Amino acid sequence: MITVAGVVDAVGAALLKIVVPAAGLEVRDVTLAELDDAPIGEAGDLVLGAGITTPEGALAAVGRSAEVAAAGLVLKPPLATHPDVTAAATARALTLVELQRHGSWTQLVWLLRGVIDRATAPGPPETGEAGVYDELFALADATAALVDAPVTIEDAQSRVLAYSSRQDRTDPARVSTIVGRRVPGDVVAHFRSRGVFRKLATGSQPVYVPKGPDGTLPRLVIPIRAGGELLGSIWAVVEGPVPQERLRDLQGAASGLALHLLRLRVQADVTRRVTAERLRAALRSPVATTRRDLGLPDGPWRVVALGAHGGAGGTVDNLALWESIARRHGWRQPLITDVDDVLFAVVADGGAAPGTRRWLERLVHDVAVQDPGLCAASGSVAGDVADLPRSRAEAAELLALHGPARQRPAVLRFEDAWADVVVHRVVTAVPQPDLLVGGPLPALVAHDRRHGTDYVATVAAWLEQQGDPSKAARQLHVHPNTLRHRLRRLGEVVDIDLESPRDRLALQIQLAALRQRP
Image (cartoon, rainbow, N blue to C red; front, side):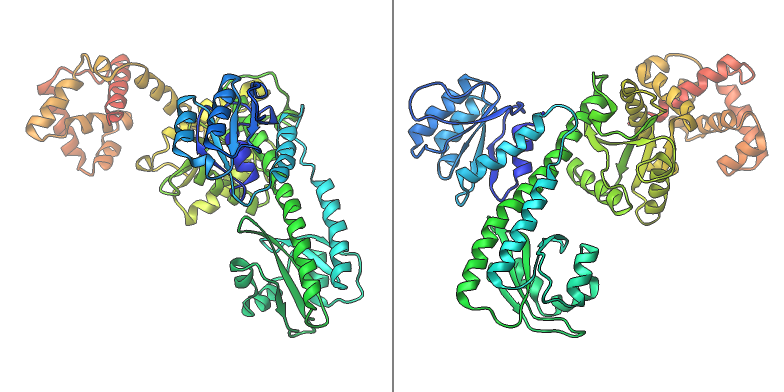
């Protein structure tokens, strides 16, 4: 399943933008809006207003799309932001999407078809990356023929996506780049000192870089952009400045490559989003699915709630933070998603490789040294996919008890904190006034407020230390004789039996309820 918002995010802001958000309906197909009065598509279709040029036509498309419960309508500016059109879409609860002015409807249909087909395909989502990479290598050879020089195609992070087969002109920098599939750091530093990356980030014109140290041959660098966004670049090892007509041919090749890089990014993003949607559904409630459908490793598993106190404010930011941390430390396909504004990771319970419980606990401990806000809480073991919701609920409950004021460790496991969970469930299941309905504690609370005494804290310390005066006194930072004196004085205020196991249990529940007070 993929929603309109998921489709827009997958295609990217270079082409699409949501103007009027509405219900997150599943996108099942893509269809073109007809110019006559015939019904538009079917329920779940994403309608493309390719031939609509007037506000009247856009309003009609909004009405006909809403009638068939279409997932959304895509229009170009200025129609997508026309006040009458946006008002009509809002009134009909129809998601309205804007295709950027430079965007091609043909290009969009091609991208959307790949997004929707992969999102609705049965079984685990396939990336389809192999086909796109094959095409990129073929395009690298074609580009090399245009410029009569070996080329590499890189993404915006200087990672090599493809390279031409011809090797008649090369240098150590090119060899290292191809072997390592990434431009070496010293080579990056050389090109950065020449201002190459600054020019790539801000312009669309080819950049010529003269020969450098250590036998680095000249380079011609052509930005690959879509909608103003830098997607990657073509790097050609040249002998010298390139004639103008070849530069024009190369810029044309860059335009074609932009579509392939968009497609590559879309496919990878769709795979991640579809997996996250399936995982989210499996964590909410038991569903008829398999381990393979969710992309899970061999079980059993644990669900781990991830916190970032004091970090980035939103769930989306925290998700990006955790995914970045996980990938940087070796988990190539992090199984992380959000449920009710809480982030969860599903990890294998056995082993110590990336993506396992022990690996994640070690990672959180290491990272928390630099960022004490990061924390994690894991539920108990899930032996079956149907057990994942239970493990998730336990992890979420533990994370809620993980406040910094409790001074807990960076990682909590359910079996290590089950007693806290039991008490928490008791005191949250019953309203606090009902738990403080009787016994000596309410009277001691009132006495402390009126007279400034510490009788409630004294009773709490005595109970926590199981009646050991020395330990209770250390907890309160007083002399043991002071503790004994307080116990005698509070016994004069209320009738309290600290020798009764039942009374002690009831007092501890009431004290836990007091701590839950906002």
